[in-house]
Length: 603
Image (cartoon, rainbow, N blue to C red; front, side):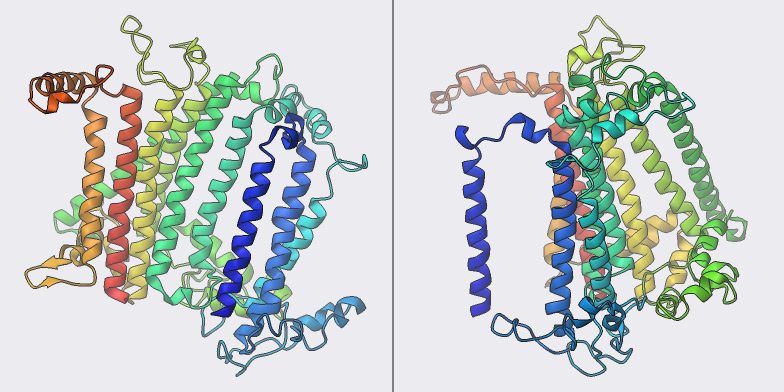
């Protein structure tokens, strides 16, 4: 308890310091200048060295000094952290260059987590694979990884020119980057000032990067679990995966929204003449039409295969389904060491140079993990995976099409060349100019969010169904039912919603009742969204005027007056409100389904 109070006090102290610093730098005397915000090299150096380098080094320190001893039954606390050596030889091997000593005597495969039984003394290893008991990555491997990351980023954070006039200048790099063949025009000339003077461009780049990383985290947390025993907590795994994918979707769509705002408010055609940015705008028709073609191809072929298979099942001839083995993806998995497909290639070939190079280091642990059927690393794939992969590809390409078109057409299009003069969000250019409704950059973002949610729905359905059949030892259900749409509706959605439907029943309620309530509430919020999305301004204006008329003629009620006449939300406002309800309701509904169906089976 003392430790907890100490830690809490320390965090509160840091919070107060941060709040005071924030307040101080808002005062005129201490306010940073605009040039400070535009010092790209200093920002790069600090973010690379500080944000990534130092934080990775700090995490390595925590793992080496606290987590690894804890995993071996030795608990480091405030009263003994100066006395406990994380390695028997201390810093000796570091200063004598014998770094390999830190990798000697790792934990054995019989190590009992949290005890000294089977524990070693190594702190930085390259074992590969998972700890047999916890089914998570070896802590000593994680420490080694973060130390390497720290070193790389600490070096990278000293590469850019600041006080001493040495290192790279971002402006010089970009100005010099003109491809020799002339195929990219003036290359990256003008980009430094364009990016540095536009907060929206910078925010778009940051959101795009963060979105990709967040989605990567979702994939990483289940396939290469870092936390001890998390691989055995199925409900937590399902919730974390779904949470990170939805967060990633919103962040990525936001990146394109701010890209579009940049084009409308900050883009200067003279400054960017014939550089890569201008050339993107010049051939936007080719980009948009190719994305359209890819989306159409994926959509018609994938849906065609699913529907064909549905019809074959309905007619009682399942053997006539079109089932395509994902040969290329299986080959990729085999190259990484998965042996079940029978490909003799790279790491799955015991006689190959790739296999022999790592056979005495990390490879045995990795190969054990990748060929172990109880974890989520390189799951065995078949025709059902092939189909849903292409359904997800359809969703990704269509979402991208809408977002890219919205950004590239934000300044203007053949239909509306003066679009940029109307700003980011506008409903129409009056009734006299046909076709100008619903084509603002905001409308593209608005439409793309529906496709994004749709796509992530397919992604999470796939992940969840694949995993619950794996965890139940019933993978044949997914393999057989995922090749046609009725299989998804019946054997995934309907079958797994039974726990929710029974949250309240004639016998009372149970531990899943709260999720049953949330499931209903989510549907209510989701359906409310359509009230704003389908009935538009005229309907609501008429309704408001009728209600206002009744209000003014009702005793007592008419004592309350309004200063201005009530009006309905504008089309743009109503779409935002509708989109928010649709998104929140959609996620609440699936979250309740996911948690109840998983915890109902596995606790």
